[in-house]
Image (cartoon, one colour):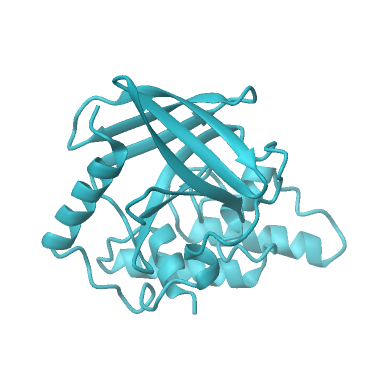
Length: 227
């Protein structure tokens, strides 16, 4: 398998050469430092929060977030420190490599083993997003959920905003929001630790954006919209 850093760099170069999208009003602006910096510590330094399945949602290069079209990048991390890295690009069948992961202080290291060699990535778990950075400086963000899709129907739309407002109304009147961990992560699009009307408003803005021809994912728009 082609080394991941080369594959990702090639995908990014192609995206740039093809004029990947100037951001819309929703997607405009530099990503917040907290989203692109790897200075933050993992939420759970014992690794409990890292175990599981992770899917790439967007990439960040030179402080700008963007989608990588036609590429699948998935991680499966087990509690014993092993796992797999699965990559597919340009419509090719997915290929998986064995991997190991470890924590040293606040730094997560994932090592991908392929064709007798290895490649290491460093990263962090923060705000329900797992970020990995290779030696090319490109950071890939992974999530277990689709941001903005707490009802898990595969779309980010007005129904998700209504879902969030209903949960917010319950919690605001002394009840329980009754959201699972993944629903909370998907609903908290601002990643500020609260599920409220501001999250619903951003989802409605994104829904309006895609309804009028916008093509960026909500993860990219959220990252680029923060100031």
